[in-house]
Length: 363
Ligand code: PMP
Ligand code: GLN
Image (cartoon, rainbow, N blue to C red; front, top):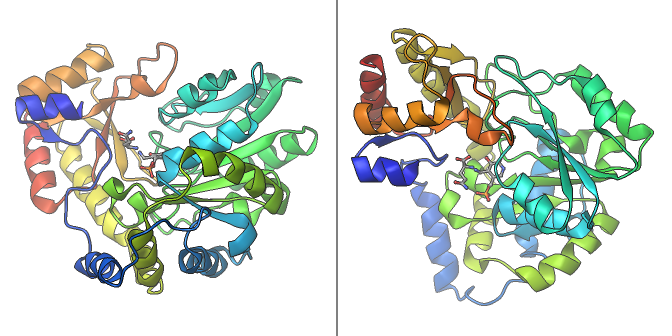
């Protein structure tokens, strides 16, 4: 959709990435570390100052202790962390439960290691989990469950009851958990993100994945990390060492210093919520309907009152003929699922959002 947006000069609210400048202070720190000579390979698990700072952040935010030496590994973005965690555990014939709509890398990553994806379908507007269905999906072959909170593209956050259900289910099953928490700091309306790290019974069997792309508005830097208990970290690093070996040194050092100021993550919810609210307000004066967004930098909009077209066709039409690129939500399901919804990314500057709202109100 980004390519189609470029081709037709449309406002691109499809792929998830910010279009406003990155903090000048953060960029200055990268320059500083490059100039100071931090330009060679980082240690395989990541630069220690960054791993220590991540442990500090986890302690401050979730009141949980993680060990920087044995439990934190820096990766080339969350996508590589997800892929490597799957490489660590998925073997031919294993089943992996995912919740759809799902981030698009999960299925191919499972399949490349010979695993079989077992999707549990969640539907708009609330994308509630049917835990009976999850129980029914578990077999002797189930090796891994992948969860994503806040969810892309559902924009939903699991309730306490969901977490209880998951703990109960896993109590009786030897299944690993891969928790994609890349939007942990983008949650709205005063809600608090619940990390798998806060649930000891889950944490002991989990890889928890985060992304600096989402945290620092730097998706192009491709830096993230994974937190897992020592044994799972050890196994993860066996793959990581020969897949990526190590990632960008000066940026790791710069981020370590930058994260000492907690405002970069404490201020993020309000920053993004203002953008969400602007978009919602604009859409309420259009023919689109709005699915409330609880987190992430996405909003789902319904076009039932506008067109009967399938989602893909509508999204193409919206890009080519109305100048706004979005993503059809059907793209995040592995089997046909038409809900007349498109996903809109609102991590954009004010002018872009104003222009987009103006165009969407004309549809
Ligand atoms: N998981 C989810 C749910 C995402 O939305 C994204 C980013 N689109 C990623 C993982 C990948 O993050 P990164 O860019 O750090 O690889
Ligand atoms: N995660 C972002 C999205 O969902 C972009 C990642 C990508 O384009 N692969 O749009």
